[in-house]
Image (cartoon, rainbow, N blue to C red; front, side, top):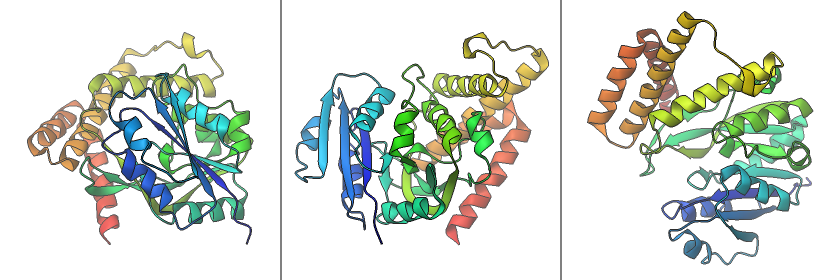
Length: 302
């Protein structure tokens, strides 16, 4: 079998705590045909020092001024020279068979992109639940920015298509991965390999109310601009009742997510407090998400 080569792009900024584990998870792959392009986006901690300790010839390290996540990913994409490209966030990790399984999956179904399932993990590495749903048959939902089926760290793209799309938008500070995938969906089929092939790390300190609500607001506007062919900048909210309900659901989602991350990182009291606020803002949303998450936990234990 002809095993295609893969470029793994790792953007990093002040990731001294996790970068070594991240890079090692790629070096330990049961697959030989890959390169690693690490873009150090102006780190001010020990990240650069740690990166200098890697002597593997498959690794290329680029140091640049701090330009943001999208710019760092795009710098790596520009240097990617192989058939497939992956974008691995520097606090996430890959399972040893990830590239082997996913390149075979991409080749078998002639896909422009695919993702996999990933374990949620806390800062200490504790696993809790699984993320990643099936993308097959949902290209139109992905193209109009209403559906993000898997974490970007699980994704693999045809490099040619990723470059034709122009990479990640540097104008978006949130949901830039969703917006990028929406453009990729116009070039061909996207599927999810329904195997857990990596770990997606959640940080309690990064789950602020401002960022979460901003992310949901931008995602809604992106969806409307794609599905109704209107300008992203000129979208107005019109129904006050609908708006109130949306805000309640978003705040419930924010606190539910924060509560889950707190519990994942053994912050029990703050986790319970966050879940209580989620319940207060929208009982329907709270119980819907709780049942779904319990089912995923039970499934992952089987």
